[in-house]
Image 1 (cartoon, one colour):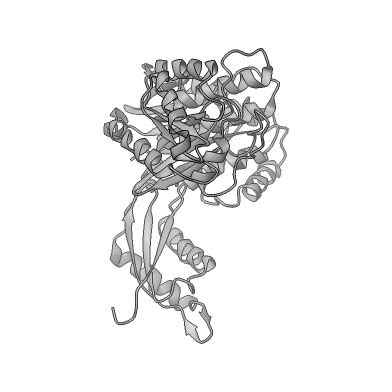
Image 2: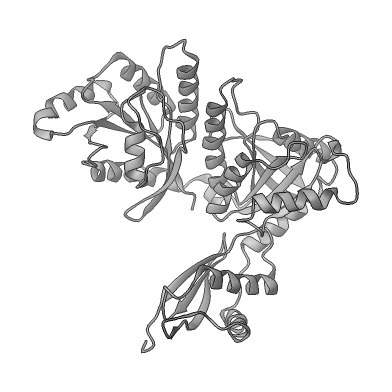
Length: 442
């Protein structure tokens, strides 16, 4: 099931980042008393009761402004609004209801998305409730009083946020079994060129399906009688001199596109090499256990010798060392070089993402691995591995029962993973391992 996306929006300096950090459980956004300082990481995976969702923090919306940073923030918040399933609209009880709040409320009403109205900085309920009631005048529902700083009132607010998930959980996408492929990467690496070339080369019937963001379009591509849906995050940026804001746009959209995809194609510019931002984008897909292909575009523009491909491969593998399983493809959208191979790799990765291994076979592999390399021990107590079974796909997920979770070091889990990969490949997909403790007598 697709993880819901929840965006926090509101004017500058009403406490969006403070609320984001309180819900994310760690200091992620920079919090200062100057409007517009949210610059850091802007998304986090949050679980409330049995509901998991992705929370997106935005810069403040200043509805009427000529200030370039604030107008950038408004555009970026609009992107978040269009991307989100549910919106938390945060206001400030101390400043009271201001004209800009009403304008933001109008913007949210037009989005037709579920909105949870939050009144922040309510440190004394009894004293401040009459001020909270003033926010009913916005006409977008009941205001929820909270104090993000002292984490008061967050439970009721989260209950309301999750209540709206019921309306969005069953979507047409859930019933659509066509492979969904997100094309992601930094601006100007050639994402749109790749999609345009795929459409042009195959002379397919192309129809536009409304995407999740206002100006994103999903594209149907048909090849050899099989349909694919490409989720395009290309061309979705405003011209801007502010690099940090651009980065925020791409991250918001990337998170949303990755959530909806089965396979993520991370496009890297061969002429620039792999960058830190590529690793950030790759990390989003890796954390969510998606199928991953690294497409090195503009390969035609590189001067080559017999070592070129090895040099590039080693550099990419070094920077993206956390995902050694990712498939690598050197291509050119301009000339069409190796572009057709992309479909074959997508098919292979999807097959691996949905591969199920019989429990008996898994336990044979594990027994052989244990015989070859003894499990670690500590203070005379040795790790014992009892049993392994696969419990899920997309990504393939395995549960290993052991006598002590503490003794099951990450390195030994990786060793078991490598043995499973040796037997079944699982190219292009992460594997997830859950370690469960079971006492001997059980």
